[in-house]
Image (cartoon, rainbow, N blue to C red; front, side):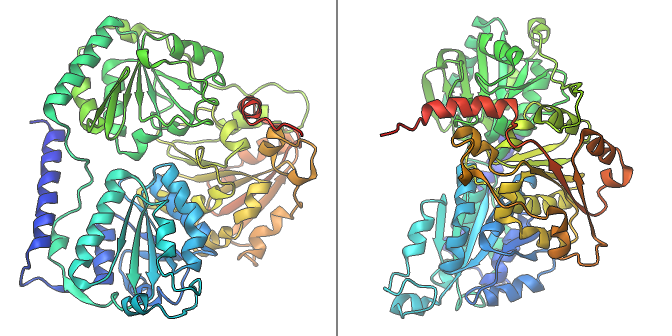
Length: 597
């Protein structure tokens, strides 16, 4: 039996044990409060940080959090930023989850945009809400934070649209099983879940017996007969293609814990490998058979030609959104594609539900060995970038991003805001074991600031290197408050603020000269002093206006070591943009063309 099969079998045994535990009572276990039961489960899931804002319906539970030895409370400036932080934490700290705690109504609705983004991009986040007592929920008095019309379930109905699973705790008999159910859904389905904690249940005692059984991270096992058939069909396609196969890796390979399986597939077969924008750094960008980012018609010409001319494409964990596919310009038809997903596999035009990639990929790798020499001889573009030799001192987008590529180090966490930054960095190779974080599908501007807070905590937990944020001046104004939380917790990200006087991506989509795309210019280098470092000892800010100034800063050892939080205001032309953003905007403009009446 393979190790993967053994793990799946053990996971199924644990599931059955938990179901049995729900049906029978056991004596002799140590009683535990419902609040501490939840914290114990979060500790088992390697959660060390809980984000949110205190409110009167969650304060009792916060006493337990503050007293917990390993789960720390991170007080945020608002609930939206807290949800963003939980999202960033979960993305960087794989095999764990993000947790955001809010109060009933006003708090959870403020967070809901962040939860929706995590749902959209398949990020495991627990949306935890302190709610009125079970008695008040039944009698429905006109409480503060309600709509005043007795609808205590209105917020639950809202959450159902943005979470994959919900648990509304009502009594001690079912509390542990309900907590386990939604947490299992969170870690196996890689999407947010919703859990309410009524004030009168937080300190109620229940059995701790279930805590002895770990929650399963693995999806249900594949049907062996269907799986064998699918494998045979894929092998036939590989043989027909005479090993002219490329592998295209996307976000769900990361979200659904298939990194290891993908890396074994690519290294043991030698097939050329590329990634979509949302899959950037799922595969090491220093790997010799890695060719770069495929974004349909926006791709570099050499990458586009190699991917689209292959006789067979293995598409792993694809999310075919507009910004992830060059506005749907993928030229890889189903007849030449095998798609691997967490819960199904598509072989050309046929879909096989319940055949997930985590179990299937190792079996496929074994069947494809030994790989023919043909596969390893297929040429792969050299994914490098060269700093252009521009004669003036203006910091252009074309010069800036390749220059930043010389600054990155292995194990850096690189976070790029929607728009200029996320498009500009696509063609820049990141060092080995780097983590790229961006919200390309949901695209909520300002998301990266809160996300950087969570990502920096996660990076500290798992021993990664520097956390580096690229954010536009317009986006930063939405969520700037979280810089104060970074200071309070002694986090040390490097923040590059691209000051180009407004919303650049919007200018290229529509209204290039319109005032609605302008913003007020802030004194960016004074921010860290205002937001918590009045003495100026824990932070440093800079403004760079020329290529020489930026180059000198990047070459400064104390700056590169990131021993304190640092903000760099980068002055850039108002109407300059990365190549990929301009091309994407042109395509989106045609799709979303406004017709004057």
